[in-house]
Amino acid sequence: MPELPEVETITNALKPALLGKQFTNIKIFFPRLRYDLTVHESPELLNINITSIRRRARYTIIELENLHAIILHYGMTGAVRICDPSETRLKHEHVAFFLNNGQVLRFEDPRRFGFIQQTKLQHAGADPESLNHLGPEPLTTAFSADYLFDKLSKKKSPIKTAIMDNVIVVGVGNIYANEALFTTKISPFTPANEISKKKLSEFITVIKETLQKAIAAGGTTIADFKGVDGSEGKFNQELQVYGKVGQPCPICATIFLKAKQAGRSSFYCPKCQLLKRKKVTPK
DNA sequence: AGAGATACCTGGGAGC
DNA sequence: TGCTCCCAGGTATCTC
Image 1 (cartoon, rainbow, N blue to C red):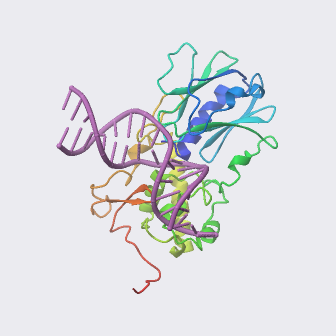
Image 2: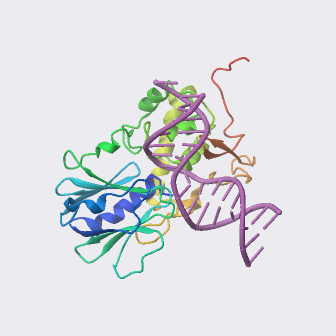
């Protein structure tokens, strides 16, 4: 399940394979992913130099010289691979982008939560308009304690839900949210506006460190993540709390619990991450 | 307006 | 073994 480090890994691996090349043909095997695919109807994508491959949030943006761009989103189970066209198509490979060097970029997604969009950019390097609503990148200085404290000052929803809101900050998915909350000993149920700026500062530092460590490790393999070369990420060996319900906390040996928040699983140590409320409302 | 719920989707695992 | 049921989760959209 690609989160930011996985998408960073995939995007970086695509750069040498795609930069300076051209798409000569795009073949759709299954046109209905999360949204209907329209890229095959677009002659402006063919025989144009690919000038930039970059990541924004959990999206890969493939920019062409004519400012048309392809946005890839991997959903839960999406993956891409560069291979020889003679290789057998896998069961869930939905799209093939043929390159002018004879190779092919294939998009695979068993659960079809991902999507591929075509868009026109305002200028080279611009974010696509469809991504304008997104919050700052977590690894930039824009994601600071001041920023987050301000953003959360009126948020009563639990911190776990708030930090996964990609209007507040992008790319912090369920796995990393769980891990960062555990490391900073914040209860996932704490109302977002009740956390001090000092604690948020610590939280941000851990998020950044966790993401950077995961990128260095090539992403997390929980179930489905594969690199462009089919390699698996290594970060799963470092997970401390995610998926560990029923196991003892390495800090205090209390058994990890699991709860549902906004439809997503939260894993936590009820002792280390004891819910501390600022104000207690009498009943 | 804000917050929570739901739909989308399929493979894999649990339970019978 | 084979069936059914439930769960995983990012994002858009709906409801309260």
